[in-house]
Length: 271
Length: 271
Image 1 (cartoon, one colour):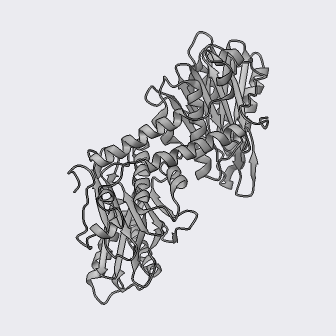
Image 2: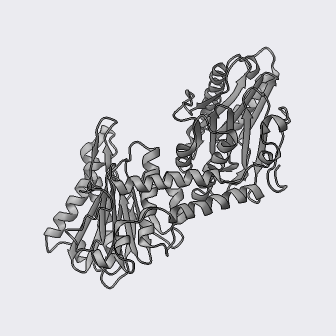
Image 3: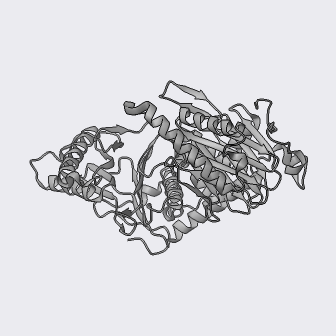
């Protein structure tokens, strides 16, 4: 599996991807899932890929080939980000159809999903999620991020922290924490973690870092987060009965089944 | 959807379930997914259910009917928790087969998964997850919890906090936080949240609480957790370049595509 997340804030875009791919449990290997295209000084595109590795490699290779064929439609010929998303989704559909035909009845899942982000001069930075079915969506003010792959483990922290006004560095840290939570809970997502920060209107890769397992910053951020969560957790409000008795609170207030006691530690709403 | 989690610690068991069921987006309703059986003073069973509501209701109803037929095999006739798990898995298989036959070709998913926990005098408290396929597993020292339903959003916090030595109240708070994260990220999981704490060797429902959306304790714990996460987040270690420049750090160090800069904020391992 894979986990990739992209975040769009007022200041720019943040991309974060893991590097683990697996075909079965003993075919684990490491591939970058973040691809940068810079067809002209006024255009920057970042593509992150999830799904079948042969398919995603074929998609990236098609995008590169098209760029080298000057008369063809390619990323460089797109004047708007929406146009680029449509072009990438078309390539994705074509490559997936070819892949499906070539593996035919073997039952292999050849699908792929993509996140395309970037900026073209004259327009705002934009993000698109291209589904395996090749339709695509963009982010929103309420949900200023897009995810592909193993996205559920790392979602709660994004939901809690991110807004359009989050700084790019905070957004990058949030992506790293989201990635770390996913890696902790799912063995098919793994380091190195790639992070790319794109600051609006620079048309440059402002920071593109690769954090492997032993990286000191990654270790620091993991430790800091883990310790802080434990501290936060131990500071959560106590249940009512924990105040009532300090030694063996459970035995003190337990009542027998089947008319089990409906303790209500808060207001009077319990049923 | 549904989210249920059960935790097994040295002190006993904790169960937590949401109450939302949906058949399509406009058939949202609220049903308890936690069922308590107390066939004798020496036996306590808690069953949590996920999946097709008709199927899970039929399973619970079969367990109740069997208890009323004194000569039949039922929860009360089980001398060991493993035996109870096997009995419940058999009932689950039978009911699911019936359900599948009755809806036949309509394409409705009638499957159900279950968590069974409890204690029978002479044995230790135990937890089992009965899959939709009716095979079942128990928990482990490394992963002292079991989940059914929409389990991924709420998993990272369980992975970070829970061990066998966690107190029952901390385990219950961890389950509530896990549930809250799931509710925040997934609209098909919703309150009221039911929590049941079972202290080992009591054969009693020590605390069985229902927290609805307006419950003061639930609001307190949500607010405390949310605030603590934000504080923890803002205390995470900064990137290298944030120390280097305090005004516009990104512009200061950005380098152009396509030879994007591989900043490494930590040790020298970045590639």
